[in-house]
Image 1: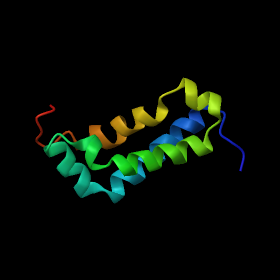
Image 2 (image 1 turned 180 degrees about the vertical axis):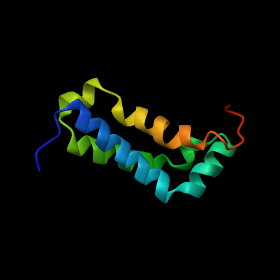
Image 3 (image 1 turned 135 degrees about the horizontal axis):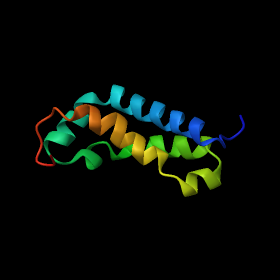
Amino acid sequence: MPLIEEPEKAVRLARAIASDISLYNEEKIKEGIANDTFYDAIASELEEGRELYRSRVAPDLFARTNFYDRAVIDIILRSKGHIKSKIW
C-alpha cells in the first residue's frame, strides 16, 4: 500500500484513528478526563494509534505536521467536554 502524501488524506486517517480510539476506550477516557490523567490513562492506545498513523503517512508529511495530535484533541477531548474535570 503506498504511503499517504496528501495532507487531506492524512487528516482523514488521523481522525479515523482517533475516532476508533475514542470508540473502543470510552470508559478509560472518561476516567482519565475526570481524574486529570487522560494521557496516562490511554498512553498505550495513543502510541499504538500514532505508530499506525506514522506507518501509513509519508515520513516528510509526518515530520512537518501535527495532524494526529490535533485529531486526538478534536475527536476525543472536544467531544468529552461535558465530563467534569479539573482541567476545564
